[in-house]
Image: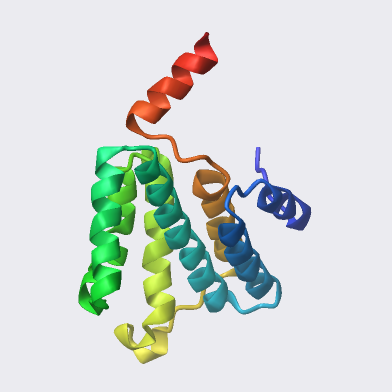
Length: 173
């Protein structure tokens, strides 16, 4: 059975995005996708994902979680110092951090978002590919990236460590 997610389904998912700025960013990606700007849509989807991970890390940090607090401290220090190399390194390792330290992603979600990040690199750095083989994402690939970003990350609350266990206990009782 093949399940497709059409425009109205994507629009419904967007309404479930918790963070207002994450919602604005993914709407920008959807607008680019619908306008046929497929590379821009992939890059905008990555921006929404990266922003949402940072927002969730900040939220978890505010709840007293140790790993997010350390990560946010490192991020804030790099921002304050305007250390572009450090910020690039943080962005490069963002999915690994979200997966391992922040525990925001299941294995299949992590794999899908790694593919988004890889495709983002192909879109953002066309000099890294052979001229005759410029990356041309299909509309279906772009739509899949948008749906994965929404379903795997953007619509979910940041649950991690003690917070996730406490929420589970509350739901169970």
